Length: 279
Image (cartoon, rainbow, N blue to C red):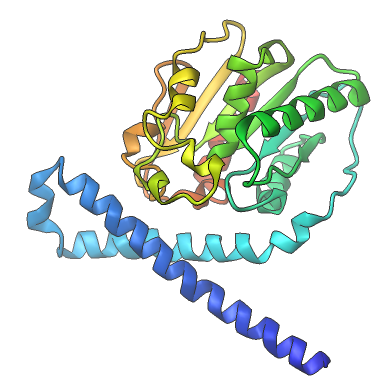
């Protein structure tokens, strides 16, 4: 019985990278198709060594990070009680679609090594709607404020996590409870890939959806510090201009994919710099 279980687990572990390779390659094919239709000169150099090298340096890390993230999902099903310190503003990390809080393990460790003690996570299921998730976020923020004796929290949201955070501060009146909001690869204006979504939450990210129109026309919180970190080679937010926001501080990275934003040094360093800048 145990031998069969171990064999099954080994097969699953071997299949995950193969599946992710197909997904990542397909996403970058669509990325190139979308890009080439607005940059016609790129077609002439599509098979150049420079472009082939770029494909390799983008694809391999993205497949690796996606595989790690998926294999860690069982770890994130269990809610742990992290050691926290009263009086210090907590950093609440919000994950994206189809993963859970376990994807933040490396990111969280890097923040803790910089001296941030109150780094916490929560699960946001991809099968609930945006209002249900925003309500869960609101409750978690109030729990942290009461538990730690602080007035505000810092929010760091990757992908859809950043959109839920924006919904909270812009449409649900939570701006006065948030000191800083840092978005990582968030599809502020949706993504063309959202048309393939099978969940209600994913469909909200179809460009020009009612949700996106409400959110992007909502008032900008005056006291809130927002840092928008994104990559020019995001394979999940298409076109990449959908990552942009007309307010807050923008930090543009290059040479990394969507999932890599929560693992690579450049994006983690940019997050830490934003946190330090805001005090």
